[in-house]
Image 1 (tube, rainbow, N blue to C red):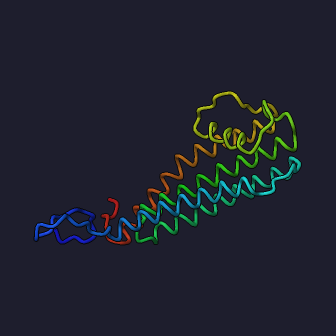
Image 2 (cartoon, one colour; image 1 turned 180 degrees about the vertical axis):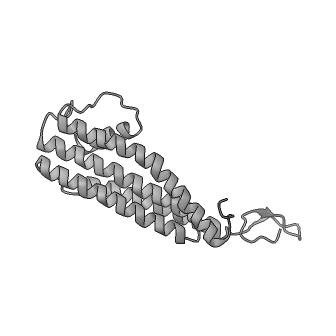
Image 3 (spheres, rainbow, N blue to C red; image 1 turned 60 degrees about the vertical axis):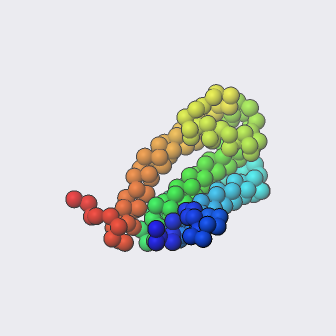
Length: 195
């Protein structure tokens, strides 16, 4: 009953209405982490829609994709280091996953959009930015409705890269993030070392 960090309702001793204790540091940290993750995701999606993506040639699209994938790796490594040092490693891992995942998806949506602009007919229908993001999400989630498909060899190669990267992101990255959380908790003395 002496835990001021837990939000609860207690009756007042004088018979007055119950009062609410303010949320503690953990709840505030969770709220900040969720807000930061949502802000990063929203910012990346807004940037995707606002950036002046023009019809660069296939070489420009390839360079953008390569640099973007490198950026995803750099952001991911930076986030793993931040998780280990964070006072709330689990929350930081949620932020890291949100930032990395959204950056990855927006990167491929941009690549599909540019590919369709530079080489019309690369997909079964012309892609708007929303269509490119939709195709990216249906491919990433393995739903693949089939309403938009890659027709050109370049489009299919980029789609295969996204599929492979998505599997790696879900499998390997999740394991690395979990390991970073464990390391952060061990560093704080909140989890026993592995046997």
